[in-house]
Length: 123
Image 1 (cartoon, rainbow, N blue to C red):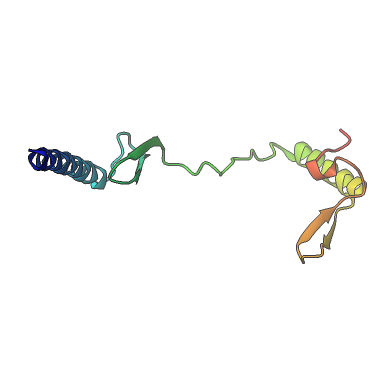
Image 2 (tube, rainbow, N blue to C red):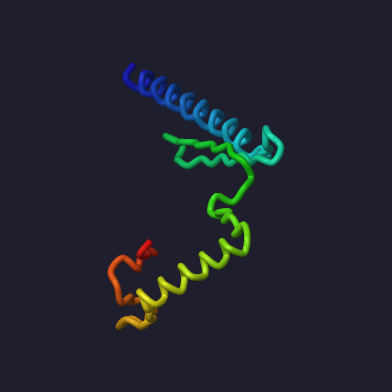
């Protein structure tokens, strides 16, 4: 009688493992499908991690642009170009940037005035 119940429990465990394995296979097939964008010019990124006991998936949608590219407006006219050049010259004269190598051989900037490492000027 005890052996019979052990056999039934083993059969239930095997059935649960089979169901989990099939569910994971179905999820794997879904994840393996090619990622396509829902919007023109966008992207979809889905990734999953885990084991047969637990797993986690995350999906990200967004525009297909480089998030690290910053668009800098160009100077409007000659007067603004002259103003920017004068500001840069004042910063160089005040801060006097110097590159010196630290004890590990890494080049580091050193400045003559405080705040220059943050691009702070007098204006």
